[in-house]
Image (tube, rainbow, N blue to C red; front, side, top):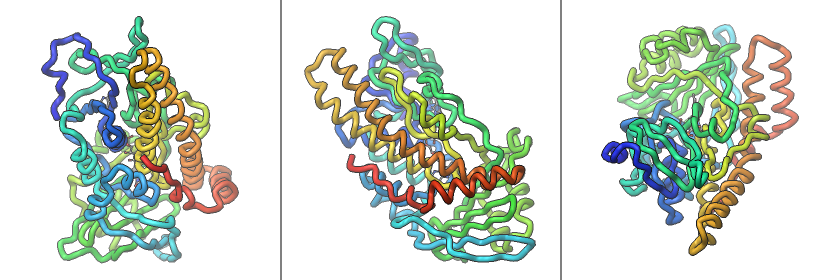
Length: 411
Ligand SMILES: Cc1cc2nc3c(=O)[nH]c(=O)nc-3n(C[C@H](O)[C@H](O)[C@H](O)COP(=O)(O)OP(=O)(O)OC[C@H]3O[C@@H](n4cnc5c(N)ncnc54)[C@H](O)[C@@H]3O)c2cc1C
């Protein structure tokens, strides 16, 4: 799975049918969805190994439907327990008030990101994923108008179709003309804590909320707990300190003053290798409503299309849905392309990508709007924004969990 391009003669253009830029959740899921439909693709991932930054990922019923279509859900279910209920805990001056935390109808689990990445990668032919291959730029061939990718080692790859799954700072989305994502005023720390004798949290999702800090905790297994914490972003969070586990732990523990001791101990006991601090970036819902996500036969998916803050835990689930819908659209159209001229095949590919964008746009618009309103409710610098967020959530999204009912359909 090493970067094949390294062995090639420099500057020789090689022709591929479908290239996926980025081997994160979306890139691997898209390659797998295409593979299940009998369509070959090549993934270029810049990291030397599969990357699963962020340790855990909450997977809601819509995400499990997509994983079922990809054929990896049964394997993944064995790695994590089902979470049937949740508790919402308000933290105020050292006092706690508990109420039920509504969860969607159906399956909720917290996965190890690495298990998800491994399950997707292992179901793919080994030659599909090329690690250590960074795409530096993309242009259109002046003659054929086919996209040409420039790799870090000067190899040029001509592709019939390019799918940009290169995350929140995507170069492919810049190429298709999507605005850059915005920086949100909060950041998120995440970690895994292992309890040799079993953790004391049972099978519940607990969400603690104080005026400035939210702390979520979910069981992965009976011995492994995942937690995430969101708080206001500081300039130090944007510096190199964000990579320092000691800094992440210290500021997280500091933020948890007045929180239950069990929670503070959990954060203190986090494995330093499983501790992450990330700034949050998002595309505005209005960008998503109008953006051109396709240019010719180049299209984007996953965070490259719909980066959103994690307040409703849907970025990854939506990326899996993208993969299923994109492969279905391509497969339906490419069937008609057999024995057709190059021009006709290109036109059918463009139609398939347009259908995919059309099918996904409103789904990801509503997810990003709900996330946006949630973000406003967390803004403690402006009462007006908070009120707007609360009103928006109540008026537009009466049922706060209906986003988990979505079914991306059969592959
Ligand atoms: C704090 C936080 C918590 C979250 N929690 C949840 C959750 O609980 N549930 C959920 O569903 N979602 C969650 N999300 C969202 C989820 O993590 C993302 O939506 C998901 O990872 C998007 O996958 P992706 O493949 O599009 O992007 P990424 O995971 O970012 O993958 C992009 C890949 O592209 C590669 N790449 C980038 N540029 C290039 C290049 N030029 N050439 C080659 N390769 C390149 C990168 O190395 C990377 O591997 C959370 C996000 C954050 C920030």
